[in-house]
Image (cartoon, rainbow, N blue to C red; front, side, top):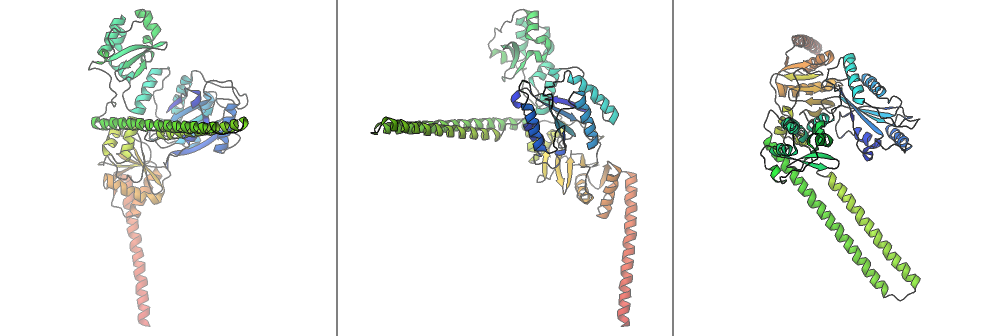
Length: 541
């Protein structure tokens, strides 16, 4: 399992209610939300609990750091824990981090390939009203993860016991976006050459050979690529911080080359998708073009909104000026004129407020429409819309092995695509297609059809028909014993032409067929006997 505290870098974003609303939003997916629990609050209702926690945070006016801790516990693919087990694990993590008495709301999500639980914790103690910031949390979290993996028999994951901020940044950027980061590229391509430079001139030459430049920014140094992407030098390596470089190379000296000359090398950073087993050049070109078109459209709309706002303001100014010129010609007392001028001024201010308010609303709506997407998000959207090439690109980056836990059906031959576009709810970044058959949630990773644990037996026939369409008439069934036997029973009851690779299941299927044949024969015999008896009675009459 993996446990991570999501950093909240600004007080403005540390909004507990906004975080919980996002976590509890189903987003149109039937299986996104699992268990929602509230702890250390006076109510079990979600909305009153959010208000209670928000009021508790407002009572502490001294804290300047974020007042909300966002903890995420994620389990490897195929691991599905019960609600009681999740509650026990949540309690242990909160106690280890010093949040046992703090208010919190936890939400279980099942909309990805990995079951995970989000825990929104109020850092403000409900009675002492003091803020608690755990120190060395990454060490406590890593140790507890190893203990829980052993106690619950979970898959063991390598946990970091040292804090490597730059490595975490690389992992987060490249895992979420699917694009090679400048930080990761520098580390992989030219870090050793940069470290070997013993003068500022040599360092500038090494950077120029890789299409980079180093510049002062604030109190530190940054590496800048030809695309304008920058990264702090200390993030690349601590030995490249400004104090360390000055200590090693002397006072900072800017490059004698022009900025244009520093970016003429062929070996330079290009924002490209991470290495994949299939060629994504054509897809990435389409993605870049669409993002460029979206940015251009946004700029045009924004300029149009500004022009409309300025035009309306200018019209309001002219109207106010015309009214004041008319008032000058009015023959009346000074107090009356003063009142009339005040009315014109009030109307002008009200018009200005309305124009600016409408502009802000339109601008906010513009920002939310056709938002620019990361590479993997764009691939997921395209795959959901039926783009098979995008789906293959997502599945090619998946690192799933052949041994998967959970109830699922598979076969030797399979179609690595999906044809149920009308019922698709989501496509994950690993290419797993989520949709529903009746009341049963299905997760299709191309090689397997995963069925939700609370599958209804009435829906198994539809699931089997889909599996036969994808994998043929010879299937492999894996999962719990109850699920496996239910699949066989559904196949026999619905007269589906299917066999199973498991000898025990196939033997069970043949036994059920024999029983069904015997039962049908007996039923036919009874019906025939009744028919003969009825005919005999009629003949006797």
